[in-house]
Amino acid sequence: MARKGRARAPRGPGARPPEGDPRPAGSASFAPMERRGRGGGVLGLALACALATGGARADEVADAGDPRARLEAGAVFASYALGPPSTWHVVELLGHDVAPGDKQRLFLDASESFAGGSVELPVLVARGRESGPTLCLVAGVHGDELNGIEVVRRTFENLRPSQLRGMVIAVPVANLHGFRRSSRYLPDRRDLNRFFPGDPAGSSASRIANAIFQGVVRHCGALIDFHTGSHLRANLPQIRADLRRPGLLDLARALGIGVVVHSGGTQGTLRRAAVDSGVAAVTYEAGEPLRFQSHEIRRGIEGTWSLMASLGMVRSRPVANPMLSAVYYTSRWVRVDDGGIFLTDRKLGDPVKSEDLLGTVTDPVSNERSAIHAPVSGRIIGMAFPQVVIPGFAAFHIGIDSEPPAVSAGVPEPRPQMDGEGVDELEGEESPE
Ligand SMILES: [Zn+2]
Image (cartoon, rainbow, N blue to C red; front, side, top):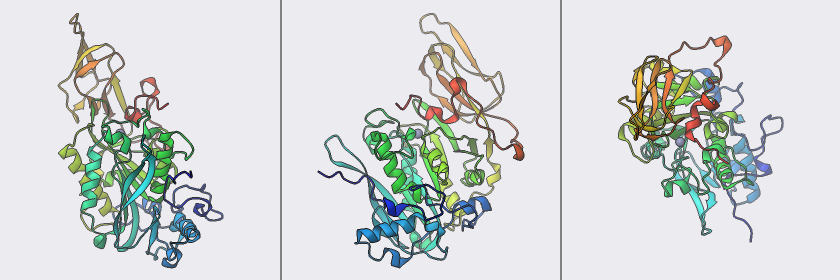
């Protein structure tokens, strides 16, 4: 029996970049940096370049019933950013034509259940009547992280294509297997967020990642990946971005969340893979898993609208002063040295000075108590809930007060953490393999 297609997006030879394009086949459909985009709003030229508008000519998708025509349309779509910016017509997404003014729910054939039924990820698309950037919203890469799922749902519910410039593509639940089981992981305990951009012949995680990347991510100009803390930890609402990349600090600030944390992104994360292929991607981190938290959800919705306003996609008002964001170029996890009962009075967002008491760990048998002190001055941007811990447990994530690095020096790689961890490492403590 023939295998079912994993992604309905145009693929194969027709999806290759045009002759002379240095990008590999299947890489993001993305404007070269020398091309001026239509980002507009408060964002700088660098980002505007990165968000050039797209659109295929109507005649190129006119015969969508012919597979060959689809491939050709796919080829054009893969390079749409190279077309004249004035064109804004029908595009093909996941095998469907999406016309200006359309709001559609599509499905991405990403995997199969144990019973053999296909697992189709809902993909929501709103194509504005006027040309503009393509913004992608992806939530639920970790199936137990719910805040982002609600941010995406409410944001999309209120989008009016008649008032939109550009296109919004949303994947509300990227890890449906995990979501159904209230689990961060896929059924084989793999962390989907370590397998992007994926491989169509790889592990189950890699195949799902590939389907999402080819079906959706390569069409994005900008992308927000929504997450929460993990494993009984919570995060202060924050934007994580690789601040060494052009335009990403402006983009991160434009969400107006107030806290920006530099992070190159662990290899295999959706954000890292998207940025590597030219998509202006950031992560919104807020709250804790397995809960819908109204404050964190509202901040995410406001941030998304603020970004769309900054990009000139909607008429609502962007955040008043994006420069007010605190930007942490370095951060550090504080680990406990003893096992026992971890307790703390600290709250997310608390400023701390070096040597301040953060919490205690008490041996439940001997009553011996050890103190946890702040090793640096800064602000608590992530922390664990009181719980039983063992030595090495990461209890507090501190954004470190520091001057921005000199422009000429660029932003350094995040300082190596204990165990060589990066900022994002607690997005998945366990080895993916
Ligand atoms: Zn996550």
